[in-house]
Image 1: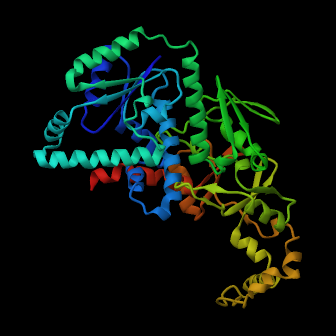
Image 2 (image 1 turned 180 degrees about the vertical axis):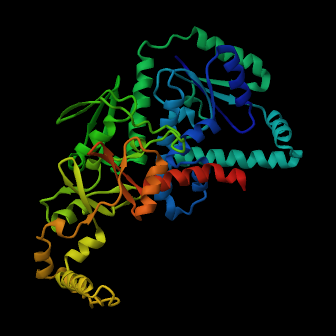
Image 3 (image 1 turned 60 degrees about the vertical axis):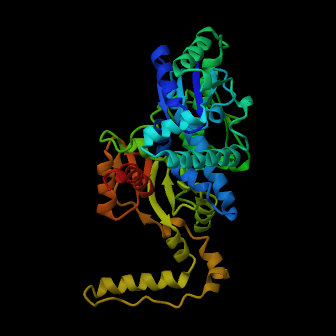
Length: 461
């Protein structure tokens, strides 16, 4: 049941201690690079975080967002890596990332300066003076990191359950000490459930934050034995149906509860920890629910579509929020067409639509007559005129574009991208039989490819 978190200053022997505990106790061992690789699936890296320490003061707000993203991604990653409920974490910030969990035993390892210098010289192949300078810089950055990220001194003993000083103790003795405490220590019976709830809550929060079109800040998430409770204000209620549908498909969610009722998860297929570059990945693994994307039915007006688009937000990988590009026009379970921002603006300018219709009629009569000029001088003020308001009352179906290309839920990502490129579209409906089960955006595909290139490309350069 216990998870051992080992913290240290650079070159103090934490990896060796973790290895010894792994040998003695049999607990799985997670190093910093393992946790970082798992967190990188959310687009967060240690390098990005450490670069934030050097940002000028006017970038502090963005650095704060980077910190929050890093902490959430790491907590979700550790929740997945320690699904069995026990293990050894030898990496950054375990005392903070796993704080408050009753099955976590937090150890701080302290080593004398001469031992650290010798370790740096041996492991990094540095002469003594360079090893000393390296450790001095590492300690400065570690202290700055602790202050800026968590507003704490990392050497504060109150952060730990046990501080082990290696000045008069060998690593073997230290391992015997920690293992002996863990073998004798009694953990409360509900610690396993508490950690499982923590892991599921962070998985849901990370999925909403990094992998959904919703503003995760609008949603309060609680988890208890597979039951996820969602709550929030007006913003949450406006997107509640889509959010519930998204969360109900996350692996490990048995039921979603809101003030409006309960939804039982019957198809928990959304495993956001999967390797999305896998050949086995299907369209269903990356699709969004149509309800989670801006939409209206076929009876809505141009104004309704503008409201639907303006009231929605998509969160990008770096935490910034942007408006989506399209509104879906639905007919029950069917997808009739899509309307872009460009088409919505065109729809507000009656004379442009009239000119384009006239040009189309001329092309029918004189199919080889060359290009028909439709250029008009569009006045900015015409978009704020009574004529524009009148045009906004027209049905959205009068300006929507038809759907070009679709895939089935079990089609591969190769089929998805081929369909997008062949039809020159960046939104593809995903069908389950005749029913529209979801949609895939070019943004999803690009992020998958970009993640692979960023994670693996450096090794080839």
